Image (cartoon, rainbow, N blue to C red; front, side, top):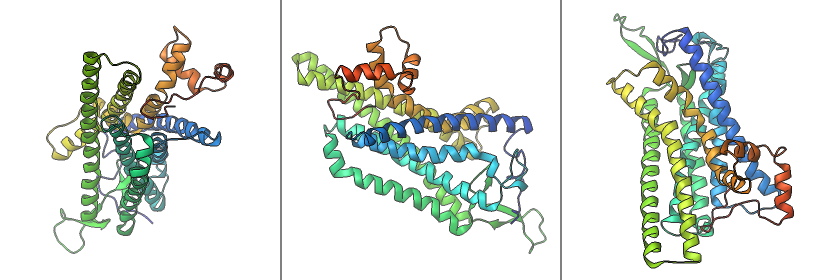
Length: 368
């Protein structure tokens, strides 16, 4: 089936020219590949723990769900124009209407699931520190419900456009979009009619989707500030009353988890915060974004969330490696932690000495 395309869907309509289109596609594929790699590392780490009979906690199960949805989302971005309908004229576009629908479905499924699990991750850290829950309480009271809500919401958002043929090409990728063409029943050649998709459905889902992005960013910011203030008060109390033993250890672990939450939040702002702000400004027509900035924050950073999450997830183990090997650069520590064949001697020596491989915090988070 051939799609009737207006200028908004045709070649170079979202780029200044063919060179910019090629640069954008290359950058997007590189970023998506790095994100897939990062998420695969996280999934492999959690699966390895399960296969070895180790206990996982809500933090690891949530990051597992987040990584699975990120793999879906990043893989679709990596495919990019390869499965976009050929008639769009986009670089390397060899797809058709069916492949466009598949791309759009998994694009929305992965995107919404990623947002949902990112908020669940923030919630998990928030209640552990501020409300002093343990992971057992979190698992019993809210974890199952969170998984059900996130998966159900992602599936609902992805399925609804299927009934209205609303997965269509836009800027080299297929997502929720409406295709217009000249109306046959009027003499006004400038008037356009919807020929594929549903404008109301597209607008509503667009509003819901970007509302979720802003809610995620606001919730992450509030949680980060709340945790920071709580830990700061703990620090003041510890100095005033000179607490020792378990309370001092708990405070030290709270500061450590606070840093992890801060890094996750920074990743969100780099990948989605600036992107959402740029989309909002462009939609209002109030500003024209410079091409170089567009490439960095709309092509390179959004697919990188999985890669950034990997850096944060494995950071505790890398810092532990640095402690055991003084003078090692953090980049080198990541290399040894992420490459088991290179790090095999280190792992064997730890096992023989009876040292635990995983760092389990006082608040119950089982770090990588």
